[in-house]
Length: 310
Image 1 (spheres, rainbow, N blue to C red):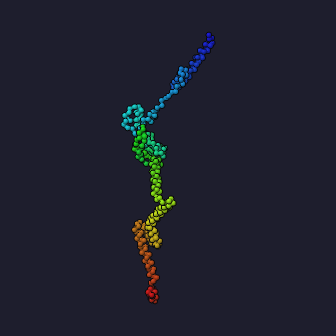
Image 2 (image 1 turned 90 degrees about the vertical axis):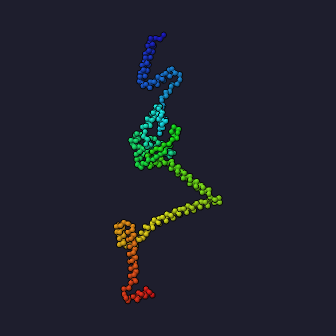
């Protein structure tokens, strides 16, 4: 039989543990207290491993990702579930005039588009600022109509949308198409070269073929140079003739030409001045030749006649 002292100490220990447990429980919030009760229940009464609590994983954001459509149809509006009502309420808050683009994978031809939010409309993003998500350029903007092809809910869809971009982002927008065109041109050149190589006669050797190709290239270069030279000569004929005429003018004729040009400002008057100066120069030359053969004295007339008519 237990003694009175041992019973007394056992009662005191039990009450102390009870007070400590109650003090600890009061210091916990509802969620932690619930987990502790479950853990104690499994530890004292259960024979399996502790239960793993699973919280709900489907949030409103997950619901929007599942039910959102870039362009909603009438069938989507007919659905009256709370998920579709949530998606439609978010869809109605978007502004669907211009798009915002994500060009982080533009080299592979993958460009993402979405509608603008209210904050982006107030800031001018996508209309007065470049529509690229990672670009804030405001100069050199241009508007494009983009045929947006995308896959949504397992279906291939198309939509014609507007996108405003700067020059640098416009190159990203057309990057894949430009590269495909360059590759197509390169393949065509290689195909033509291959066909020319195959069209050679069987008795032609590689050296003869290379020599003929070299002669053809030299001939093409020579023709281009000749064409360029003729064009330069034809363009510079008028300037050369004008400079040549100006060299024979005297000081007075040049002053007269300058004065007439300032007064008239037309090419017809300058041409008249050139003609008159030429005529005057010819007259002076003729008069000088005549003066050399003129007779100032009657005594020398016979000598002059003999010299003129021997």
